[in-house]
Image (cartoon, rainbow, N blue to C red):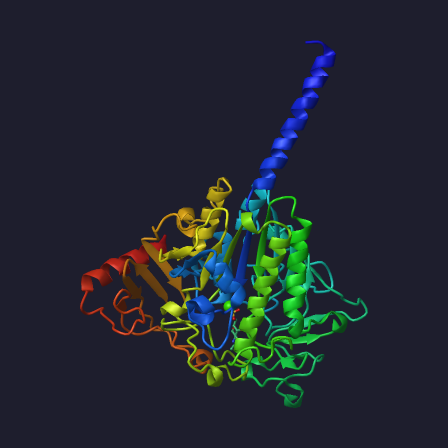
Length: 503
Ligand code: NG6
Ligand code: CA
């Protein structure tokens, strides 16, 4: 072959090669996880909500797969998010609810779900609630925070750093406070009171909603929070604007990355308290603030699906809609959620709530929507969010690194409704452990006293001095303890739980 031909063939090869890559990249499924905060199984229309309508979520459900036995790994936020992103059970790193200035709890040396997707060619983004900690120790909020979502595997981040009821009340974009005026630096303190924003317990007249004694730190936007804060006035968020700020940011991420495959972890703050809906949604339900923020959250979901539709991406985007832990009525703010709930059952027929080892603690409203691959329907396969890591790795044909995701199992077929096979054993983490096996649910006894603040919330966290065993086929609401009747099942499940916890 002479030199001219060599050049000619190289050019042809180069372009077809590039085109193939572009072609296959373009056809990769986008992945969007919509992770709602404190949304209960019964809080959406398709699962029987009364008093609030969720038309956008119901449309996803109508055209997608409704999972009726899919679980967050834990009955609280940080542990569930930790498991989702690492494929590890939360107990492995003692993941527990974090304060707003806590260090990052994910080991940045290890592979994570977003890092695995990056390797598969995905651009990754997180928009919304983080609550996994930031930095290594004391955080300087006035500089770029050197350790955060980027080091966990997100190319882009726009965050509520912890929760709406914790300082600092500012957004972080790519680990920098948005809109900070350097002449008004931010200081944050947990424990030691610092002068700055007035304190809730001293200034009840400033409050939109009264609170329990634990939420009486800095008053910002008429809401007193956990923790104290000074400075950063120009950067303060307005809680009522969350739905607009977060959906606008998520939509921009989708638009900016529409040409290439992307992974969006869209982490809404609703239904967590403080529940202060935007005026567009106030009185949009008959349940007061808690119902109104469910309607608001539904609108946010609709914004994402509409945006995907506009970009012609809805057909080939895998949307997984779910929640981080079960519902709670009174969690610190007096917003009359308990008084206004009426006939509505936030946890559906299931016993328990957020913080609880009973089913409502972790059994999440879950919908999978992917018109190209997922047929509309319902599945009762027993699934855990900890498995999304290896299931999505299978979807994008990516090997998982050796030490990564030790508790994750590939259940892709079941997540897509192509199989009914669920987990043989499923761990539920709360203030004690629950274990599912077929129709059985075992709850480990625990002798530790129940924390006072949980009792004050009228929550039954489910730990007892004695073993509990329920037959969920006959007793889905976990009312009849059968432990004494079936000692051999108890022994088997006890042994299995010890094996999981000691592995
Ligand atoms: C608890 C808070 C509660 C809520 C929760 C986090 C107290 C007494 N209660 O510690 O109000 O913020 O943390 O919720 O401080 S979660 O959904 O992010 O796990
Ligand atoms: Ca939560």
